[in-house]
Image (cartoon, rainbow, N blue to C red):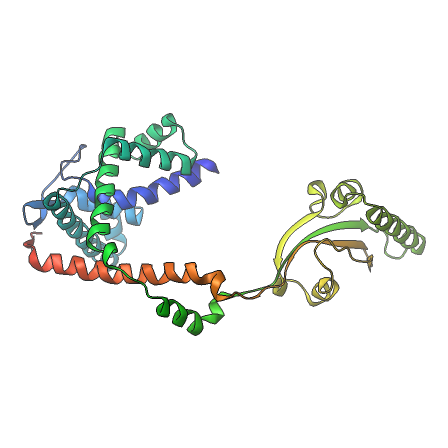
Length: 325
């Protein structure tokens, strides 16, 4: 599980940085130029590599499955690569650089986020068909791009308090929490629903367990000892539920129970349940102060996307771009 999670995380990370690879990427290259961008070129190798990374299959295989999907993906990837070439030239023009120390810190963050050792990272890179040195170069390129965007775009973004307040007033429904509960269960199974003596004995046992709980005995320990239900080995823990996910009967039983509260024995033909409310969040609307920072982030990202698109569009207008395939 860890391997698949970390592999997916790295693939997503590579999707962001592979766009910045220089056209001199090493490997088996059957190559030609597919676009000219000022003094830079986009190669067929770059295009096919990025298409495969985004679609998960080789470009020729994608084309054989659906020519329409192939041409749409190719156009999008080519546009992205052209944008990246323009950005790289802007980085050179402004003489933006990052230090080796900054690159090392960024790589350490990637390793920490993925719980990788240095050996794990090198091994994963090898599986992806690249080397550690190439990876470091791509990280450096990415950090330079971030600095460029900060300088050219982010520094010009201002979110006014009035905008944040207006968003809150017009999107209140987005900031309403649904009630949630964390439940635990002790289930005493009745083997024969028709056996009245077994039912009486089981009820007596349930009452004794309730007395032990009132006397301060740990619910989880009692669940491990007595419960025949789900989660018994984990102290009867059933997990977290939205109130709307509970059936009406269960919702009615626990609606007045506080966090830490325990129900009376719930008698059913096949056994008796004792429910404990481990945690309870009644839900409700979040205040402006609670969500202010989240709204500011939402508005900031929208404005960043808008300004970045306008900025890159302006750069494209000034650039010499020729598609040659």
